[in-house]
Image (tube, rainbow, N blue to C red):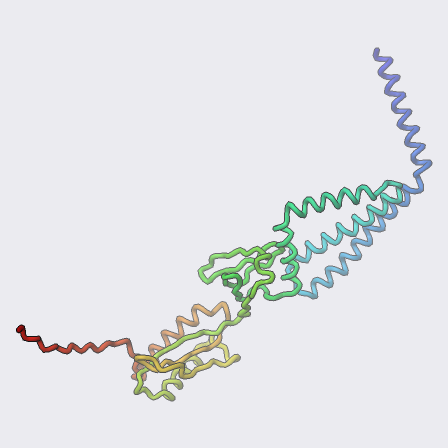
Length: 284
């Protein structure tokens, strides 16, 4: 019984050896050509990725995005050369390509949202409607751009909370980009008997004394409107995005102190109520 098993294994081994020799004899040249094609594809992929990386570095893309694009390019180039090598070996690649196409359609239908985010992410990365560090408002959300990724964009609010927006929600929407600086919109009221040039001069001195206020663009100070109780003065200086909240608080405090020191009245709402007594009617 054991002798039969040994003989069967020996015959199987001899058969495999014979088939291997026949394969090398008939396909040896093709096999060597396929191996050379794969080796050539490896070097070609490295060369293409090297040039692509240099080009992406000039576009100031985020490092993770650059590496992802480079790796995807390497995979595509190698896949192309592997298909050519398979064709050299005599393997029919037509049915394989058809199968991959059908699988790609199925995967695409199953991941429509993901692919839409991916395409929108590439569109945002290459068209650059906003950059990391800028303050934007889009689809009812606002904040400082913290990260731009392939599938989503992260905004940070002044309270340090985060808003993650899918990229497909951003692409094609109206976007307000404030950049890296913001303009304050402060309004302060003074009494109607106030010397307006003096009040405006005091405001300008307060703005000049604050180091967080930008000199360019220059601050705007002007009479805004005539209110019910006061003449309202619009104060619109600029500051860096990172200093926006602190600068607004400092300015309001400094303006109140400067007006008090110079005896400029900031009126508050008042109501004058007059009671008119009616003459009582005499009962008939």
